[in-house]
Picture 1 (cartoon, rainbow, N blue to C red):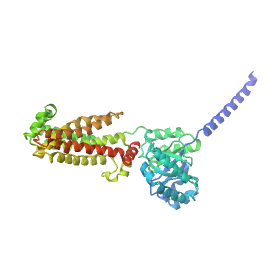
Picture 2 (cartoon, rainbow, N blue to C red):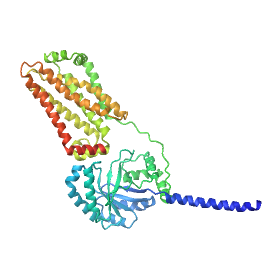
Picture 3 (cartoon, rainbow, N blue to C red):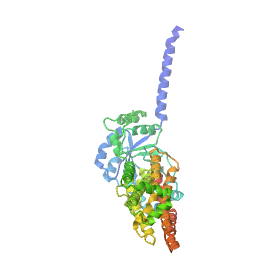
Picture 4 (tube, one colour):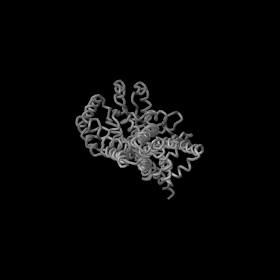
Length: 489
C-alpha cells in the first residue's frame, strides 16, 4: 500500500490541475463581457481623441459615441482602429405630434446621415433621437415605419436613448433596433457629474452582464484620475474578464442652500412681522373663519379700511403658488423631464433650465391673475366703493395656503409616495377658485339692484372660463403629449 502512495499523490495533482484549468476556462468563456464605451458631447476635439485612442484600447474601451456630424479626419483615423462608432443625431424630446408631423423630414434627414457614414465600416449604429414620449401606439407604429424604410438598404443598426427612472444613477437606456424592430437588451448611458459613489452602480451593471455601458466623456476623465482604482480594474477586466472595483467610502456632501425651504421660512417670517406690527390682524383672521358674516359687514361698511393685510396675503399666495409648482414638478418631473419642458417651451427658462425658473414664472403669473381677478370683481360692483374692500374680501381665504403647502413640503421632503400630495395640490387650486366665488357672493349681498347680473358676470363667467380652459388642456394633444413626455423622463 505504501508503494502506491506516490502514484495516488501524482494522480491527485493531475486531477486538481485539470479541474483548475477547466474552471478558469469556464469562467473566461461562460461570462459575457460588458462592452464599454465613451459618449462625447457635441463639438469634439478630433486631435485630442486621436491621442487618447491607445489609452482607450488599453482600458478595454471598444465603442465611441459621437454627436452628428463627426469630422471626416476623425472618422478616417478611427477607421484604422478596432473601435466601434455610434452616431447620435440632434433630435430629442419628441412627442407623438412631433413625429407624425415631421416623419417625412426625419426620414430624409436620417438618410442623409446614413449616406454620410456609409463609407466607414466601423460605424455600427445611428441614434435617431433621445427621450421620446413613451407607451404610445401611434408613436411606436410610426417609428417602425421609419426604421423599416431606412433599414432595408442599410447595414447600420438604429437606436434611441430613453429615460429610465427605476435605476438610480443612470440617466438613460439605449434601445437598439434593427429592421425587425426588436429591443436588444438593456444598454445603459451614464451621463452625470462624477461622484465616487458611482463606482458601486458601475460594478452592479458590469457584473449583471449589461451588453453595453457608455460613460460620459467628462465623467470618464474624472473617474480615471491617477488616484482612482477604475483604470486598473478596467485593465484587469479586459485581460481576465474579472471586474473587481474597490468601493470608496461614502462621500459626505456639504451644506447646500435649499431655496424652497428658504422661501417658505421667509413667508412665515412675514406672517410673524405682520402679527407684530398690525394689532388687529389676529382678531380679523379669526373673525373671517369663525364669524364670517361680521367680517364681511366690517369690510363692506368700510370699518376695516387698510388693505395692508390683504396685500401681504396676495404676495404670500403668489409665493405659495410658486412653491406649489415646484413641489409638483419635483414630485412628477425629473431633471431630464424638466429639460424636455424647456425644450418645447424655451421662454419659461428665465433663470436657466431648472426648477427655480418654474417657480419664478408661476409667482409672476399668479400675481397677474390675482390683479385680473380683483379688477373682475371690483369694476362691475356698485357695492364696493374702495379697491381695498375687494382686496380684503378676496385675499383672506388664502390663509388656508399655509396649511396645504406646509403639508405638501413635508410629504416632498420625506419622499412620501401616493396620491395625497397631488390631492393637496388640487385642494390648493380649488381654494383659490372658491375664494373668487366667495368674494363675489359676499359683496353681492350689499347690492340694491342687479345682483343677479353681477353674479353672472363674476361667478358665472369665471366658471365658464375655467371649465373652458380645462376642456382645452384635456383635448389639446400638443399639451397632453408634452405632459406625458416630461412626467415619464
